[in-house]
Length: 106
Length: 118
Image (cartoon, rainbow over all chains, first blue to last red; front, side, top):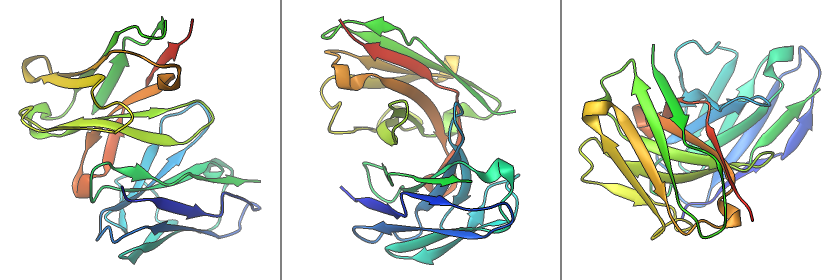
């Protein structure tokens, strides 16, 4: 199985800050890397697919980058609604695996 | 509007069985792979199973292989997860999700809660 490791596990930031979350795969996942946002009590929501493609309706403040095994999600100018848990996921090979999540808190 | 609505989650005893349902609408259901993903409240996401458009291909996580069976009825635009020999560690919120570009999960339901407890 492909292991996905996110860092940090949690981070504290202020409104207006920019933050970066990293995700490392145990082997190459090509471009089959997605990012999800999950708020308490809600289902996960797709933000980015194919490493850097923005899902329809997602603001451009979310940026994905990377290749092969190392990926990043950058969120610019944090707003109150951005405080949530973020997950990366590989869909290159079954079983599709998720990172453990990064909690972004105020 | 794409919608996936899960149902069937209940409290069941260890060793018991349960069938979850996922009713889909708002997209051409026959064209898409559907997955089940689960999440223990307060914990991370775990992929469970997938089924392709014509049911010819299914995959399972090792943790459920041999106990869970995924199926679909394209006429009813629904997917099912038959869960047998349930264990306490199967307790989770189960989400039904649609696969999109680059096999990302572009739409999902709100989940149905399964609790395995005596």
